[in-house]
Length: 439
Ligand code: C2O
Ligand code: CU
Ligand code: CU
Image (cartoon, helix red, strand yellow):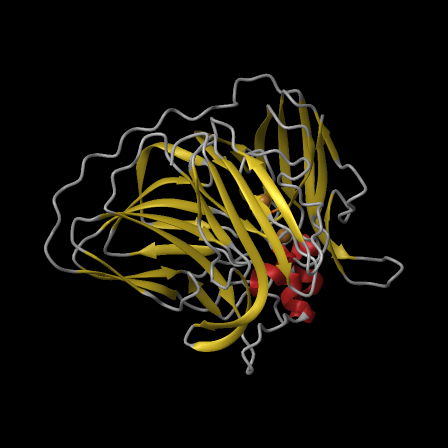
């Protein structure tokens, strides 16, 4: 479709029987599918979504990573759509919206992890100004899930919630270890979404040539050869796979997100959040048959915008921490930003539209926190005090235990109110979220 077009879709969130990983399960889903339908857009398009809530709990919709207004019927996470109700979302993408892979999921505070882990997620693709020649495009939504004996989504323990729940099954498009096929020489474009609630994936596809076009809305000027891609929860990768004869396994290697540290070490039985013991096989790529003719080269991308060298209007430090709460309700682990848990009535950061700010994200805890800001992408300019050489745009930025990451943000459009938070969704539900207003 052309620019300035319109896409209208209905998403019905409901609970029902689904076949997943070879067994009958009761899952949440959009329109009965796992994942929900992929939404294909172009910069400048208008997206209209009617969300119908057939769940027995409130929900809403967030378009993760899209640079759209947070006002009114836009990407407004303060809306609650009650059971039995519908809501009409209306998003206008700007004509200069960055191409890439995005996604949608619920964002009703306190229920985000349950609803995403339960099956509510789907991909959004924003097309390229200049198409990348490829023989096939695949959207691969990675999610994880634990089912109990009766096929219900298993409720996490209190400990798993603190660490951030990780499912025993890791699925690709709702399937356990699907087999993908290609012919030698084919150039496939894989749009990968890490839709897991907490799990980080460290992807490898040994035996195949991998070139990364970009991560989140951050597009590299030239495709970049890679062997491995680490995606925190919420991150996406736009990847080219040039198929070579043979069978290769897409696997996720262990990633250690840290633990509860000395604070909770004994109680947690170590409190490890390491993703399993060994590599997890996610899918198989079988490449066989007659080779295809070589494809034209990938066109170079326009140089990305670089906020370094611009005037900074404000500098802030945000401190991500966890500790035992001493609230009136008694103790319990609290996940805080600047010592506070989320309060939708409070404004934590007030910024001015038209300015560039520099934020230092500090992790004062013993676990990774993947920090996510809605509406505006972040340019990572330093990690651990070390300035970066490259231009790196992300909407989820991992901050390791004890670490510090500095980002710049251009608030060049969109007044309104939105949030930033840890994308370990259990941490977000437990309060690690703040409110930002732009005026
Ligand atoms: Cu993907 Cu505020 O989240
Ligand atoms: Cu988001
Ligand atoms: Cu966190």
